[in-house]
Length: 122
Image (cartoon, rainbow, N blue to C red; front, side, top):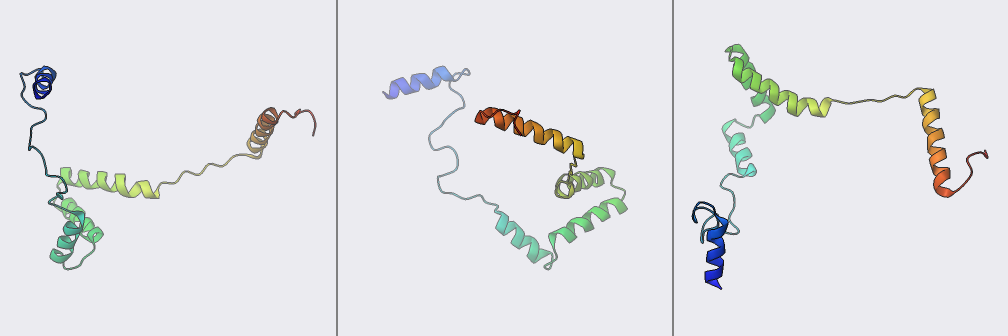
C-alpha cells in the first residue's frame, strides 16, 4: 500500500516529486503562534508607558505629516479611511409618501397571491 501512495505522490507532482507533503514538515499540532495579540498589546502598553494605542497612532501620523513623508502620510490616511470611516459612514434611505404607498400596495398584492385572496376586495 505504501508503494501505491508513493507512486500517487510522484504522479501528482509535475516536478518529479519535489514539494508537497513531507513527513515531519510544518508546525507541530497544538503549537501556538510566536506572536500573540495579547503579548503584543501588553508589550506596547509597557513600552509606551500606558498610553492608548490610538494616541500613539495619531502621534505617528502627525509626525509623518510634519516630516513631509508623503508616502507614510498616505498610508496613515488609507488606514484611517478604511478603518475609522467605515464605522462612521451611515446610509439613510428615506422614501416619499407615494413610494411607501406603492410598496404597501405591491406587498399587499403579493401577499394576496400567496394566500389566494382576491386583491379586488378591500
